Every structure is written in structure tokens, then in C-alpha cells.
Length: 191
Image (cartoon, rainbow, N blue to C red; front, side, top):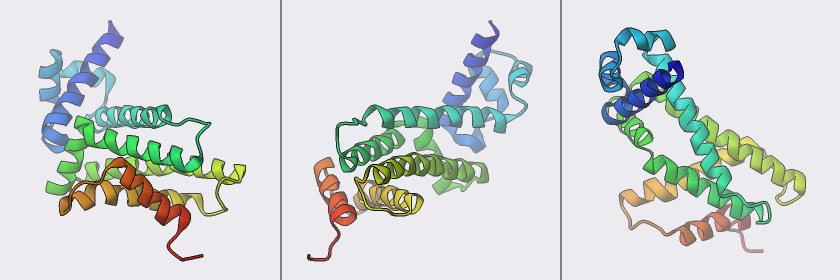
């Protein structure tokens, strides 16, 4: 029964954070949505921050899992990183809590939300960094700083998917893949 209550609270809090954002969510709201007394929440979580942190950890794990699902060890590194980044950014675009957090960051700049989004970015970069190091070790790509390269890859994808669409027609997955390969794997200098 206790696990069910905790799960009920987490689901209610996820719903509240996704609908109202971090700043506007209160423990009273969570208790009401979960159909529990506010005191029940405090038997599992000492405050809103701890509850939020639990939900964010789950979201990051789900995102990582989604990226792992599209990786195929028989494909070259370039294709795997392309598929993984697309899946991560699709997840970010589709996940209600993620959408709300980016909206709150833009509109309010809530410090806790800024921290969470930094944690999210760090988790993505860490995931990509491991894949880059593996590719270096296998000789699939030349030696480079895996963290900086992961950062550049993520930012390039974010630019292609989110920033470009602000003033241009959205690019298709194939076009993004081609540009990604051109800029990162082939380079622009004629050889």
C-alpha cells in the first residue's frame, strides 16, 4: 500500500508540474490531485524540491532509455549518434513535463528549473560522451575531447531542430543527418 501511495503522489506531482510548472505547483495541489492528505506527501518527501528531483531523475532515466533503444551496435557511430540525438530531442519535444520546464525557463527563469535543465543537458552530454569515447576506442572516429564533442553535437542538433524552425521551414530527419555528417564528420575544407 505504501508503494502505491508514493507512486500516486509522484504521478499527481508529475501531472501538476506538467500542467502548472514548478513555481506554480504547491503541495496542496499535489495532495488534492493524489487524493491524499498533505501530511502523507511529507512521509515520502521532505519538500517540493525533493519530490521534483525524484520526478526529474525518472524523466532523465526514461530519456536515456529512449536513446539506448535506437542504438544498434551493427550500425556505424555516426548513424547511432544521429538516431540517439534525434530520439532525445523528440523526447524533449513530446514529454509534457519537459515542455513545461522549457516554457517556465523562458517565461519566468525559476532558479530550480534552470538547475534542472542544466542537469538534463549534463545527462545528455554525459550519455553522448560515453558513446564518443567508445567510438574513439574502436577507431571509428579520430581522438578528440569527448565532452566538448558531445556538447557541440547536442548544440548542433538543438540548433537544427529548435532554433532553425523559429524562422525557417523545419528540416527533415534526412536533411539534418546529412548536415550533421557534413559539418562534424566530413568538415567543410576541400580535400
